[in-house]
Amino acid sequence: MDILVPLLVALPLLGAGVSLVLWRQVLAQQVIGVLTVAAAMAISVAVLVQVEADGVVAVDMGGWPAPIGITLVADLMAALFLCVSLATVLAVLVYAIGQPRADKSAFYFHPLYLVLTAGVSASFLTGDLFNLFVAFEIMLSASYVLITLGGSRAQIRAGMTYVVINLMASTLLITVIGLIYAATGTVNMADLVGRLDAIPDGVQAALGALLLVTFGIKAAIFPLFFWLPDSYPTAPMAVTAVFAGLLTKVGVYAIIRTQALLFSGEGFPTTLLLAVAALTMVVGVLGAVAQDDVKRILSFHIVSQIGYMIFGLALYSVAGLAGAILYVIHHIPVKTSLFLVGGLVEQTTGTGALGRLGGLVRRTPVVAVLFALPAMSLAGLPPFSGFVGKLSLVQAGLAEGQWTVTGISLAVSALTLFSMTKIWNAVFWGEPTEPVDGPSRLAAPRLMVAATVGLVGLSLGVAAFAQPIYELSERAAVDILDPTTYVGAVLDR
Image 1 (cartoon, helix red, strand yellow):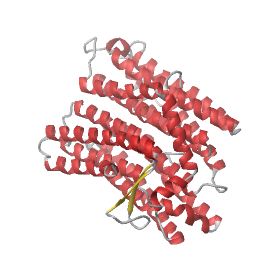
Image 2 (cartoon, rainbow, N blue to C red):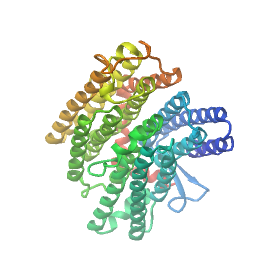
Image 3 (cartoon, one colour):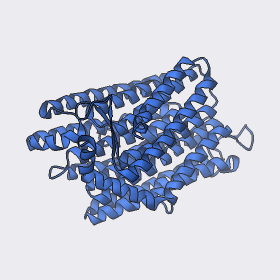
Image 4 (cartoon, helix red, strand yellow):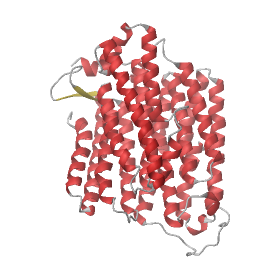
């Protein structure tokens, strides 16, 4: 069964290679892409079942044991994130296949998309910091091309910002990894758990802060989020959707993994993280309220929602971390499906500007329903998954006596509901502000609608099975706060 873990990285890379060979046959690329991602998703479920039954799974690549060799590690948090991420990747791939495409870059899309998938899987599974850097680079290298597919001037301009910022973050990351290696003699995360305690507290705190800044840029936390709202809206909608759902969450995963595993204990930066979480929530939602375009509103909401996840980590308790993990699991399909609905609106009307839309609930009621369900979940209304995630974080915040940030999270939730209502009123309610020349009924391509329905259904599934998912998240949080099991699985074999 240990072969399953490396397959999650190797299979998408193999699919990308085959897809590249068949670059003139887009239909064959589509079939290979869907089969590869579907197989990876099935494997991730099998890995989750194995981890849930037997505990942390660690696999040494090439027969070299940790901490010398490359080790892939699947614990409950990584397995949970992999399952929901690969299900989302599959839905977006089906959506992209269904989207009418006239540009000549279509044959690039599928190999790059599979490379991106491999990078996401490797980021969740790697057991050392250097290979986390490599996984990020695999993921980002594909994203640099995907974000500029189409080649319009706006895409190139926004894509350059995205590329430059991420290259700077990558440079900082490899520098910090070099400093950690110089201070401890290892980059294996399980091995670092003991060795970091041996270095002076000030050096340890500085290394933790540098890693937080590096991964904070990738996760788009305050004040390092400025690149995101301008970069994501210019990309093709399927690309924006998968970036919005996954890439920032990989950054959040890296923050949780490194801060909780490597820099826990007395020096854990609770106050700093609480301040960052509160400011990320507030600045993100205020930015969303000020926008008048569907994509830009949703992009600022990515920033705002990241604040909730950092809030759970900052509480540094089992309940807080469990709430953060549950929130990530809820947010990946919800945010992605909202962007997919935004794409359906653009596909059927030709615009996402609020001032040029209206009355779509009568012209395309299915799309209106597909927006309403994840929008209410994002706002945290019961009984949707966002309510469950926010409730768990609020309870954890109150239990730790963090009244101020807990109150801010509730206020931000109210503003999120306001901005979702703003989209609903402008796009789906009322009358069009411009005369309607087209048919009274609008219909998006069926495959795009089917993919969106599947992803919205996944978000509803998270709400329906919130209790068992929370229990798994709670067990994952216990393992994170007590790394004995993780370290033993990697080093004591």
